[in-house]
Length: 449
Ligand SMILES: C=C(O[C@@H]1C=C(C(=O)O)C=C[C@H]1O)C(=O)O
Image (cartoon, rainbow, N blue to C red; front, top):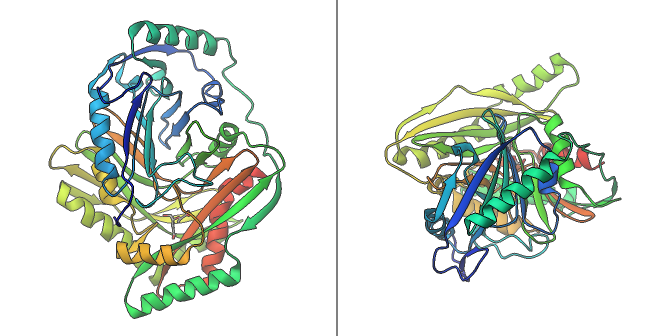
């Protein structure tokens, strides 16, 4: 879905600009007792990131040792080139798990121009935080990154003492309360939008398109995003959790179920996640919904398009590709059809090459990609920004992991703008698709109440 783009820009800043000469960065790590992550990500006026995976890796970061951002259709390449230069100057002393990583993501489309509610969010933007805490099977580690050894040591010791003094558990609080909500799309407008998309499907312009809505939520109090994510962890333990807070007013966060891609060495893992039904109150009802989804020709067609597109994108890069058996993915409020896909790369690749190849899958875009994007742009009356786009991390070796930025919202003080969408194929019913979108608002909306 690369379209033409006006402005192209690339910046790679470190804490002591100018950045055209790569600045060397020193990274030191130290093991910690388990600590509260809240102290790292409570800084609303400093850059902050949080990343947690269903398999138990949790990372929080604060401040900026280096920032990479890019616009335009070659934004993936530009970020990679800038990152290669930056990482080449990093000297890390510590275990691999505690190494510096770049956290961030991309807008859904490369024509993205930052504007409210996405002011701080470029079309591609990553930071290597100055202070990092990672919790994994290999323990909890603190890392400090700086332009010289003395600053890195000082930062490491200061944060070590600060974290050691805080209780490991901090209360995650309660929801800020919802004062009012405002839709971008009324149900009548949605019905028209879906019918117009169905006409394009009838004419053969597209086979599938994912249409979304946004919901602006005014809160009774300002939101504590890390606390909200902590509560989401309890409700959605098998989902990702992320927070991307540039040093601006807005924070993008969510609890997406969907992995876009993970890459370690030559091993690649991804999945098709498409097809949705509610959970039932009783086990029988729950199973009945799941069965109805599995047996639906429409849902299978919708899901199959995603599997096919992922396979087509990965096959040229892989020496081996395996599509596993379809399963039901059960989350607290919704269930999905899921097909895990793994591959072995035939040559060395950067995870951003895989991100570029895969984004957007037809689980969030459509088929064919360009005509689907045109439909989205002609139809949706709000800015997708970073919704449904890749969010995650990568390291010096080009390994990394990205989720799809779903079940997400962008928060600014006492407002959160939520996003959710659903796949439209031939036979889609506007009312059913409406219900599905409302279901997908729930993970975040429930935690705001
Ligand atoms: C578009 C969203 O979800 C995606 C679309 C799905 C579907 O159409 O069934 C299911 C999971 C996600 O891939 C969303 O959560 O906003």
